[in-house]
Length: 248
Image 1 (cartoon, rainbow, N blue to C red):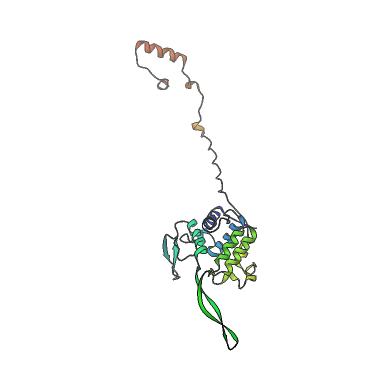
Image 2 (image 1 turned 135 degrees about the vertical axis):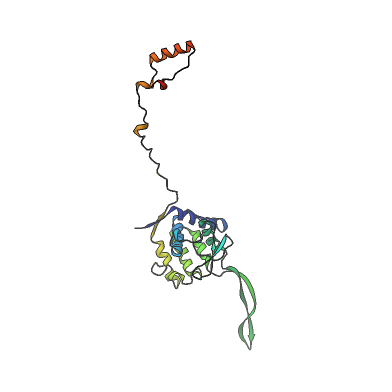
């Protein structure tokens, strides 16, 4: 039976997609069900579920400008970032896809030298270019496509990027598009939808009123005509008034 991305996880994933929408491309839709399921497949591969996340850090990021603190791993695996909320932890993953691995890379500039009538290539200098050093830009570009194709392209690009040293089981691009080798694609195929709206809480039924508290109609609930007559007579004589309850 296909799984459904629960509402809390969906909200956190929408924070991830929303950050990319606001800081990279307006073409990324945080309500695209396929993209939400794709990010859920990636997230569950990394952390299993929200209940297993430590420090609101679902993707085990070590350092981020969005973090609120740092924790040390108990098993000696170094330090990890701590975030103020789960949404902020997902946004940190989006930030890393945008900025992580993008930097200046020196590329050689080749020239041609002729020696004894033969042409030889040589490096005459270097130029600096903006390079996608970790392969994350392809993953973001896939999210801009949207739909099922964009989801598959995103997970395949992630598998071939440097995010996971084992490439989630894939060794080449052909394997990255198959559920047999790419664990992310395998997870993605287990989902069948996502909950975008918060579940409505059922209204509590009004408890029945106990019999002892029900209003019982009895003659004592009404002023006795003779009591009214005596009441007015006492008023005319200036005596103190006695309530009907005090006479019962």
